Image (cartoon, rainbow, N blue to C red; front, side, top):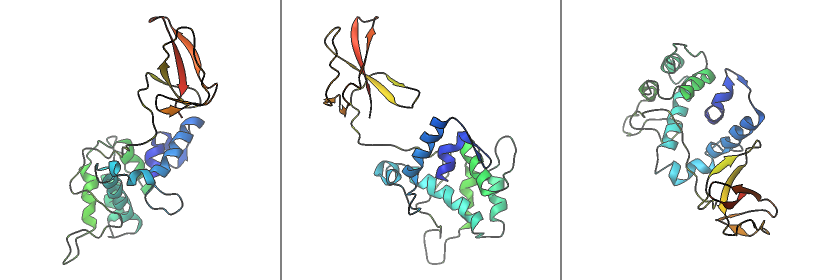
Length: 219
């Protein structure tokens, strides 16, 4: 599931293809959702910002429950119901769990209640209050869309200016220096909340404001 949602724009059925940098970035996001060694939750999604304070983890777990219902055949019609619920606006019906996941990820806004209703495949056991789902927590009501946004904390990117990305996917931010025509390329000292490597800065002139700007790679 994590691979489908992070790589969705590069997936066409079982085929994964695209620009090498895009694929690298997408693959690098998978561990934020799933621990690749244990198969359990990834570190980032367990952060309070993505678990207890937002519905991200519940969205993910509910989707996983819907897909697992077909994989484990919790009921005889589980797969048929999943494929019908995952049908996109173009009317194409998925034929397996991969194409079902792709369809939901590609059209997360399209009738999300249909997938939510698949929780009914897991009835509440007698004397219990929660459904016997394989993944927790699950949603208590339908979402507006099946999106799985992540929030990140930490790092140290503080008060950066305009951001740009180069051909290698590195993010550059501007840090205005008070000296005109002079820029200290630094010796690894902290600038604006993040550490920059020596000689990493690139000087350019902002002709509109007659000032010198040093671009730093945000690492």
